[in-house]
Image (cartoon, rainbow, N blue to C red):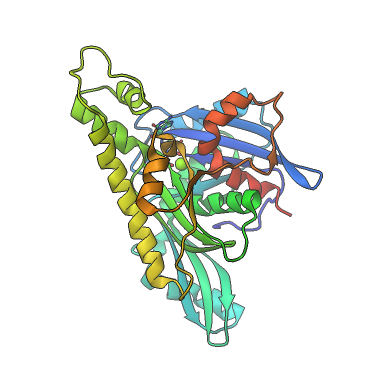
Length: 353
Ligand SMILES: Nc1ncnc2c1ncn2[C@@H]1O[C@H](COP(=O)(O)OP(=O)(O)OP(=O)(O)O)[C@@H](O)[C@H]1O
Ligand SMILES: [Mg+2]
């Protein structure tokens, strides 16, 4: 989004999340695509806090380690940004020429951006055109956020050539793998450790997207606090392990449910925003597709399905991508598939026509 049209060939999709870094490299295979390389390594706790990279060296060491371990030769990288430094919005502008739009866009965008316009990187895509108006998808990201992401990549000796928005990377991944019909409306949710990207997509158009500051780490920290557990213990309990010995037995379900409730409220709020802006007859969201490590919480998919009364499916980023069983262990792949949606979406930028 922010650096369009550069270095389209041979890119590694690099998703720097707050809990781990994921890397994906794809290649063309006949008319389709195949997985060439995949890497996934955890970050130490507190390396990225509140969406900010606090420990640049930790991040760059993990990036280097992934490239080394998987012998990834490609140096060019497409990375993503998300969280409260990112603003995405569909805006309607008066009809004007492309040159006029380019000239005046930042002036028009200013009123939609809660930061100083001088401190953001701005990009847009024309999504619709009528006789009176232009429909434009705007993306803005704080420049210092982009600068630190680039720095971490450069410190690892790699070259950041594309910076995309995570929610759009996931959407790209959805389009390739699901080939949606023009009137199909789905809500894509990427539940990470600290952020949930929500992107409501009609056909191949993003109709409403926002990031909410809730994710898997909120379950972990509440369990830690309520039960007096360490981070590792709380992570294990969250994934269904019994409480460690020495901890006073207590039902954990109410603790989990309170975070799920907060998460569902953010989804509901987003769906409500969307409905108020949707054109008549366009309101019905047909299903939810779930990605991100946070979506693996036992029972979460069922909870959301009951709450929103629509089908909830696990998103498969490799649905239409060939994955060689001999090179990539199927059991491992099944385990980590939800986490890879954004990395695959970013990697697609390297194989687009
Ligand atoms: N089996 C599981 N059950 C419950 N939670 C899980 C499971 N596996 C992973 N998680 C949680 O998923 C989260 C990590 O997901 P993910 O890798 O998508 O996040 P991230 O990209 O690092 O973070 P973000 O995008 O928010 O910066 C962690 O909170 C982790 O505890
Ligand atoms: Mg993430």
